[in-house]
Length: 299
Length: 189
Image (tube, rainbow over all chains, first blue to last red; front, top):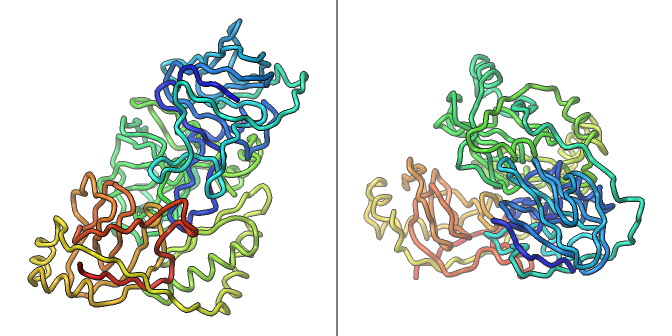
């Protein structure tokens, strides 16, 4: 069992995402920052299908009933037990030892992974939380959640993973799929503009302020969309879809942020700048190979 | 909106999923196919789509079910939509409820089926300023399409009425009340 002594602002159980019911209109959900989520799972020796806790806000304090390997990842995170420990590092915890996630004012999403994974009952093939349809779970103060079986491997402690460059305002994106809905000039403008992250950003999408992007021909016939799609509504303010996105959309998509950079989009704070760096498809795949993502969100 | 093309999209989505590389999302005139480019080269994926497209033409459409939606025509946009369409509300209700619709595909929200097509006399462009909160069960129309909001949500469609049916229930198998390809009929209450 993992016991939650303080649940932060809003914590949920997430696995890689629920990709088996997209055709019923069910958003994949899963981690807003997949890079941090998969790194945390890798650090504690779980495979990518295990569930972890996504934490928004502080303080988040927990303990485990038995000896476990744990890791905390996300933007500017650390943890404290007897000592302060860095984030993105696997650590052993003794039974009932209290661990506090230390977040900075720049942390949007933190991930707490425990060896064995959070062993809630999967619903529709996944443990990912999507509250509008009552799927998955909010994690509340006082909760206890079951953990999966884990063999404690003492050599795992101290293992580290490299955090993405969260301060970097550039995110990589391939053009399209609806680039023909934009003049060359608009597309160039899009890739050379500095946008600002809007306060109305959440697990569904990061909304951008700044130069307006003009599409031609209005809305498109509703079609399937993915996390990373940069939609341009008629108002001209781009929206980058994230984990909890709707599975279809009717706005033209000028560019698609590569999967390896989705976490850096999700972790940008309201008011922070964001720019798009154009890359080719091959670079997107190469970048993904460098990630710890062992399943989803691509599959 | 072309029912034959939608069926073709659905068949392609099924053929893609049969290949086992990942899920697909069909819509009006497009199919989104998902795969892991580390396991399947994108060029191979493109070939897979071409093959699936060739094979998918052989899929026979199955016998459609008919789903009846008991509907109270009490929506906030009923009168305005009737007046924009140049008919009285009674006529609008008749135009909306007297035909069987095809459920083209699901999207937007879990269990939300894009159904069509509306009688051409119903004039219902999307709202310029979307409703902040459309209640679950709202029966709405927009641009030749009709559907039922499964959950409370912001929405830009015009609300003609409401139903008590639960459109999506994770504990049900399958969870969505309406499935792609179903016939859908609104029954005035």
